[in-house]
Image 1 (cartoon, rainbow, N blue to C red):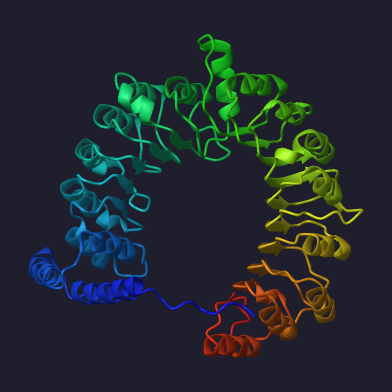
Image 2 (image 1 turned 30 degrees about the vertical axis):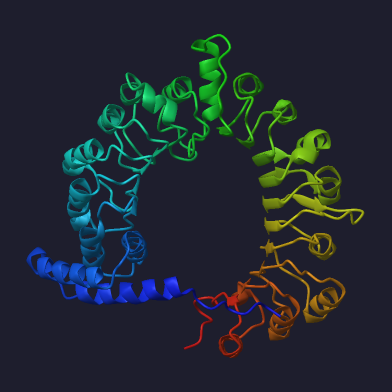
Length: 488
């Protein structure tokens, strides 16, 4: 039987109650003048009930994440609660008229923040001077997320005023050039030692030149990840061939590169000995074989690749691999061969398999996550993946499921699936409410089941099953039916 819903912790219930009271109070505020009286009353209330400093951090997070609330309520919450004890702030989405007001509050009241995420407040053009002031005031930041905002001047201010930043997100469409990168990283040795993660650029687009990105790699000795940039290998190759000090090695643990050729792979092997995860898109023939020389690699992500090359690689290093994320394969992908070579595999995600095969039913003894979309899976191959993975926790299959209620019943009687927490079969026209009931009864950890719009499952079935789930306090979510199939 699916697990029962746990009793909500008293802390969570109390926080929700206080948040509702605060939302009600702030919903009556119509201007900054009105806010002063409300703020005084709320502050007095918190003082009288003995609110601890932690509650302000919890409250501001809870309310700002509730984007269905009127933006004025979320704004006044920030204005009221952004005090010394609040160390982390995620603004969430605000409409354009609030951009200046939100940034002004952070400038005035956010000096003690150590983490700031401005995604949803797109500071541009006339608001940029406020952004410069924000960076100047918030010198304690270790995490700064400002996607689609940064330019060379922003980077210059970061380099001038911040010495402890560890993660910087300046991804998206930006006006960053070599001038700004050099200004940020020159003359601030504390910052260059501190920064370990820089998210820059846009997936699939070289909107920042790879020669400029190479500056990050060259000047940040502890850099582990250049997230969201798809041409890191190209930048590594430029550095390797033009401006590489003797004995220079990076500490990169993740690398994403597109159209990788053998020369670029040679540079990656020379400068990136600590890589744990590699993501290659449309690599040149012969490149995959060289991954075997990366001693720390344990996660591989590929797009547009030849299956036989991957199999040859995994024959040599499969025992080290815990995660495979694959898309756009050419050739035949053999799941049995993967089970033989990747004994420690915990997760496999596959989008668009040209041909999928299996032979002997060798088990995936450590596999917990299977997600396959457009897999061309035969029914026997699907059964093999399900029944041959004794530790399976999450199963998502996007292809048409040809199993019917009787097939599922036979499998569930024979195999325990005692770890399975989520099953998603978006296209299973032969499965009905009988299978839903059977899964609920048979799987002790099942908490998510869907997408039921692709089942023989009516709106009335959904209403009945949700009523049963509610009345039995069962911790199970049935995903909504499709928009054209939902009941009243």
